[in-house]
Image 1 (cartoon, helix red, strand yellow):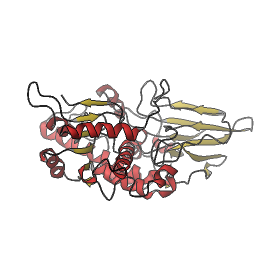
Image 2 (cartoon, one colour):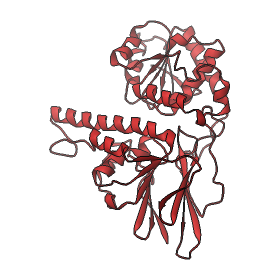
Image 3 (cartoon, one colour):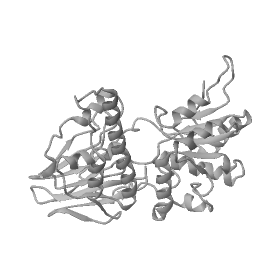
Image 4 (tube, helix red, strand yellow):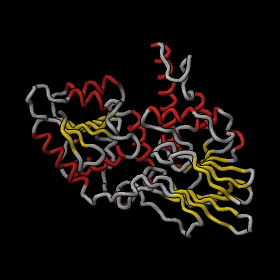
Length: 379
């Protein structure tokens, strides 16, 4: 008999992790980091409610940190088995975990220098860059729709989930105590239909015995809109005021969607490509991976004949000095910068630099938030 245990993302959005047990064998689907409040992030330090070394396998739905961020800690605590993911996910997981480990070490180093720590007498990282490197060596890629054995009698396969390059739903099939084969479907994060760049989500080919479905947006309907037109309107109005459009965007997924819409505006002659800047090293690297994943592109992406993500025509800012220089240009520009919630990262100094200076000055710059149709002015 199989049992399912939820270890994360219960009552909160982040920290996704679910365990599926067959007798003495266990499979972990995702091992995500909690993100958000200090109280939530404290959970990342809690002991795992299982023995890491005894897990038979780990299966990852997609690369976002709230689904992969505790994998290095799992490895540090003894896990040495396979970590299965799709081929397109592998590169993104590498970017995410190496960046997260670097931030962990930098945070611990800063705490030691300043003489404080919330959790330890001697500040230490949640995990190290070496832990991340060891984790990446355990990644095993599996093509979409191809069945693989987890252990004797239990198999799994990935189906496309949209949402992010390489994102998948996971179907796990095994026999119960009555000898009948049953399938459990773990949805992962499911993307929207009709969104450009990636192929649409694919439903399970056969009804599963149990469907474990993420529901972050389960209580709302996304508006059907022409995102390119909405973004073009914001840019046109802001440029007419001589202002800058500052777009806070997550490096994985959201940034690539924005770049696609900006490329469409360039193709339509409504935007000069030399005025567009991508200010995030991780987003730059992720965008290159998106461009290279030709098998995952949808028809809309392929129909945009020239450089759909602007890799060859938009400006890239890898260094801090390049980023800071944008605030002294004195000309209209579009800056796509991390982070997506505008609560950290390079986008913060752009927002501060473009806020109105005069007490009664009208704001000239605009910062669209979360989707091109929702904009706010700085000030």
